[in-house]
Length: 351
Image (cartoon, rainbow, N blue to C red; front, side, top):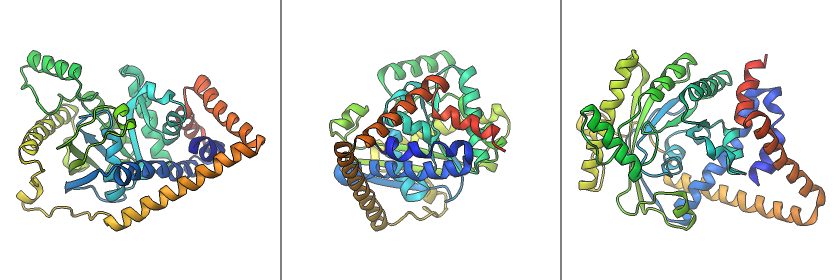
């Protein structure tokens, strides 16, 4: 309902002013991100622990995270609302997810990068998306899972087979990363001048582990989620593609070792402290302010949804408006492949 009622009227601004359109949509979609955080933190009691060295506020990052479950992307929002700007959150995810009514439409408007696992098409789509965010002067926080998929049994077997074939060690806590997409992201973000750093995020679940969205819908959530973050300024990364590939492989080896140590100690040991640097040089939003923010967002959505359902019941014209909104996304999907493709194309033709 948020997408249909709030976002749909803003669609014409895509052509009138792509930059203004981006800022309006980001604000509206941020309200959903924060609601998700409020639901699993305040309602389900999930505890969030962050250690390491976060990236600086107001900067653009490529976020690399191990993909332990299918809902890692959801829980990363807790880190972003404390240490970064959650409205700049962009996810690369599987193409079929864009077709989900409601949520899929919102993700299209957010400019998420939907990938088909066909590299010839995906590399062009990634380049178009990054070019768009560069043109609208955004500071995106792109989330990329270099492993390509979560740690299901099939993926673990495929990773182990790859390791055997290439004489590499078998990993227990991560999958061997794919380097092609990572290198492409780095090159395109550099070209668009919208990358300040690479943020390495290691996520761990010391107690309950949920593997899918279905478990979340049933009300099963991890009691604790631990993040270890390490910011790498872009100037510290190698420049050649071959060296970038090796850099990513070494990063994943350290991630495997870090997770092995975590599941022994049940906490991340700060490698930043051990090297003599100050931990958490970027201070988080205080927990009191986070709680107030989440309460405000919940109050907004309760008020909004109450008003929507009253209007649906009382006003036939409002029901027609909602049907037109749904039809708009369906038609755009059929004709153009989604709102994301429209916004990427519109910015190229805007003067």
